[in-house]
Image 1 (spheres, rainbow, N blue to C red):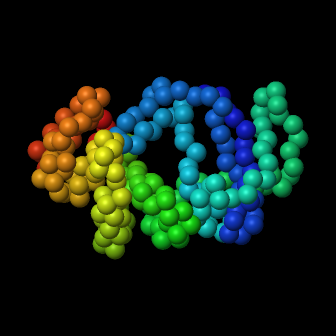
Image 2: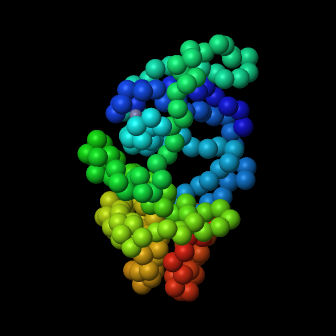
Length: 215
Ligand SMILES: [Zn+2]
């Protein structure tokens, strides 16, 4: 994995500087694929489309922020950098609660991205089931209810003509415990490359298992 430039932007909410690193080149070695369609590739980390400011804790679309500059912190291109850039706080992807609390304003800011932001929110919630141990100790009834509201709203935004979206629709239904509806969604025609994922989801539906799994 080769690091790329670090980008500095201005938070559209508080005008303070934020920064995020990039990858010049990477690969999918060691990547893990999950039943919800998310890929976790340690050697090719994604830049989140939605980020949280370290200064004001505001959540916004990264592309809505004004670019301030970029620098290379290491390698041949490394040069002394503006101290205000070096002091910029790292932008991070919001966690599930932060996404849920900001869904409305994110969708208002980019109405065409409603599907994406609901998808990111679902994936971020599923992150509690990725890795070595389950992280769900403090999920309140209110959080679970809001999480499910988002999942149901996501179903309506997925494109039934797109195999990937149709597969994700079945997975959302399975995670909601709607095993019959999920099975029905999986028994339409899919391209052959989806066979492994479909077999896995059908097997999990038959076992009435609603947990996220590796593919
Ligand atoms: Zn801010």
